Image 1 (cartoon, rainbow, N blue to C red):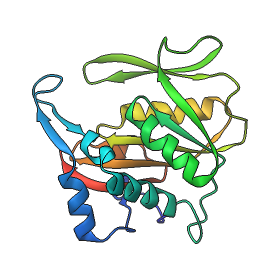
Image 2: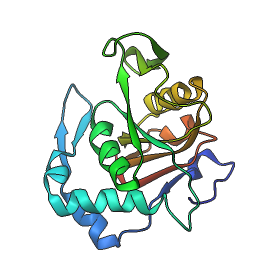
Image 3: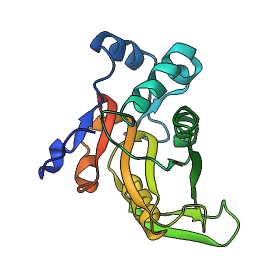
Image 4: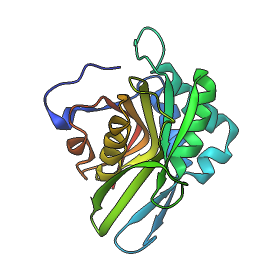
Amino acid sequence: MANQTGNPAAQVVTIETLAPERIAELRDLIRDVPGFPHDPIVFKDITPLIADAEGFRDVIAAFAKRCGEPNGLKVDVVAGMEARGFILGAALAVELGVGFIPLRKAGKLPPPVDRVAYDLEYGHAAMELSKGTIKPGASVLIVDDVLATGGTARAAAELVESAGAKVAALLFLLELVGLGGGEKLTGYPVETILKVAA
């Protein structure tokens, strides 16, 4: 992993294992959907990218390269945030030879659960984890598709820590530049493949 600085804006580091032209090709596979689910949001639809076998493989390989030598990132388990983090995280866990744990929206898991409530720009939400699925002291890699304002990602990190585990890093396919997501994740290693305008 790249060294982190005290500057929150410098904390989100672009993964450098893909050539710039390949990164541009991957970006072209992501569809912008203006006004979904409501204005002024521009939804980033990764479905065409994960439907493309080579594109999907390149993304998972780029993530995996950040976790092995010489980067020295120890990973005991991968945790994916609902819902598209399940797709990326599960594939990455298989590539790394470790287990996968889903971080779910409230009410989706049977009790007992660990739970963290958090604020969204349009309301409140909560994230849950089946109690006991992460061993205390485990090194957990958190994966999702998009880093936007950072609130959900911060809640995911706090949820992992509430189970007594350590956040190894947070990996994202996309960072929406200008929304301040990195500032919410101060103190955690954060890396992305693509940086795009919000």
